[in-house]
Length: 258
Image (cartoon, rainbow, N blue to C red; front, top):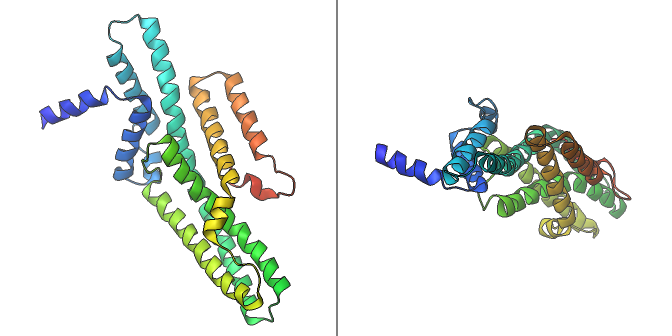
């Protein structure tokens, strides 16, 4: 057992900052929920930073100390940015859950009223707009998380157990709403909702959501490993990304502050 632990430690000391975050995340996902992780002692952020320090120190033995310090600093920035991305993705899902539940109850009432009433094509078109206001943010969250996993975390799942359950619940709500809406739409010849086509059509919004998370994560990272000017620049970028485009409402910034 001791020999195996030594081999594992030796391997860990050769990892890149990205690999360190992926290994930490894999172990953290197995250990508990995101809520439990927030109370972890020592804090996970420090665990990642210390692992990066050990790895860089090991790989640069014998080199001048100022050079090693710069390498540690830059490696910690890289790892902390990825760590904060994990935090923002999970937080966004958890904090949106209560809002989605309220919206879902409202839409169920709306759907039932239309099913019982004298629904016309115009009324169903209005209902479609309301249903899409619920479905689109859920699809964007799901697509953004999948893209984040593929592009930033080498395929490592990012959601903790509690976050994954809540996102699955939201996706089921979206599926149910689209199914029930389509039954009504079919009766009056209105446009139905195709979730796959909708997902493909929301790619630009998915990219924007990821950019918001990245810049929020960068600002958080820079609060510890950067300058005030760098942090303000990252937040300025977030504000620009959150500005509603022409014709958009408040949904443009939904989840941006998580």
